[in-house]
Image (cartoon, rainbow, N blue to C red; front, side):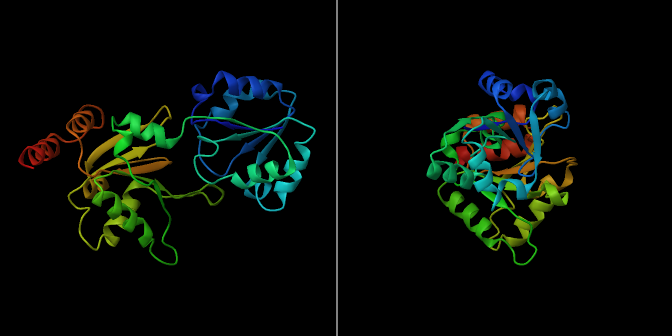
Length: 266
């Protein structure tokens, strides 16, 4: 059997169900390339891994030709795959699950905290007011205009946008909030982002997490440090959302008052 377990981002995010599978399994594969977890996470749970076969997997170990080998092995052994965040919140590892289904190998999914639910609940926002989630990648060849198009589409429907920022763990390359804001403002041909609220999320779920809300361009003035980082671009915040941004996300009072008065005028 293949058991995909979401690690969340810190040791306290592991569920009892996850711990039970980790203790009982035959082999553990730790995904080291799709996300970042708290630095001491693996050291904290190492006593649970004692006596087991443990593989620290790079991309080549869980993609391409390695998938058939992994699924074949899981026919006779219980193999746990530990994944940062939630195992299937994006398309990562879907190919493994699909191959297991084709071969009749049982798959178990143990969910973990993801950046999606953390971002929404930490900021006091309403999930019903979110549109499509997007990833902003490094513009190495062409600018990712599809990202700005999605943001515009969400804004047109009065929906917020969660923007995940590119991370390339194996290359040691991580997009920061300031860089992301620069890219988005540069692509904002309709000049719609200059007067929207953005929320900078640093290491959400880690012990040193930081959440800062301000006008999107103003986020460049704040000091954000270690990755991972994410962004939320707000549409028209509900009064309760505005209150939460003020009290829990460090939204400047002048921005709060400005957006509050806009709602009263509108």
